[in-house]
Length: 377
Image (cartoon, rainbow, N blue to C red; front, side):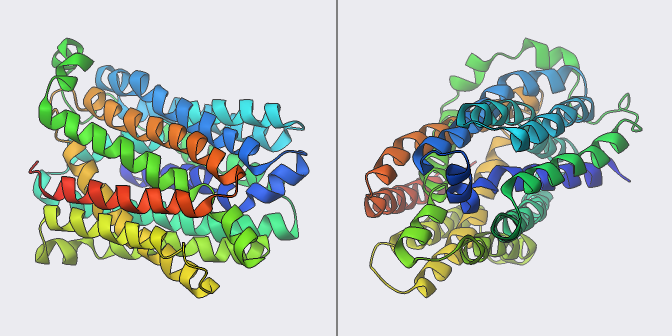
């Protein structure tokens, strides 16, 4: 297998892990004798560790190899995911998820950096779209299968299964020769500092945009399972299938990225993406039937691939000589936003103010999309 195939495979499993808790949050909180808002801290800690790890993984991959860093972290991810499945208290679960997030943080970002190293700019958003289709397929899989397994068997078995499956691509990566790695030479990467990127106005705009995207989008998505259960009285199986439509929308957008980019520019695509995500949240505010929820999930998915791949594209171009370090700040800001957003919006959720969450997310995502559309790379 090629390095990119193995990276895509491991990224699929990490993407399952990233999104798996939303549809099964009620089941986990009931099993551990806690509330959805408290168990949601497991997602907060996961996101915080995931984002903070970028400050290590990015520079380390510039000095060593993208593959070498990913395969070591992949092993840790597998072990800690299994530990999550074995947790018997809320705080054990939160701690295991924090460690899993710290190791998972190497996989998807360094795959994106690897794409930046090996694919020219003109074709890169198409490849990023394909990668988005892979991670979105994982999202759809995690939402539908996660809800089904939790409903019929146990959320513990679900975590245990894909934690062990991750050992397959990780093991195959140890057979790859990383001496002839693609990417920038080590010397310029060592000379680059984080402050160099933060002083760049265009880089700061990208970092801020992805921070608020993470805060609003994923902070809101975290609680969609609880919302659907409360509003529509659905079981976890049905909720999982509905949330899977988010992944279906993103997967469709990713697979059609080549066609889309031949017709519209990256700026227009970003603006449309922000508008579609906003519509996906705002449609949940009126007390319409569950069909509106299904349509909102599709809109969120289609919009996400439009805006986020544009931000990713620009993130991989912040530096060509220290791409891993520069992109690590991109992912750090994204997951810091997710972590803070999950915690802040969780307080509103525990107060029963779902409509306020969706209104905030909808208006904010329109602004991010327009702001990105009005800026060139």
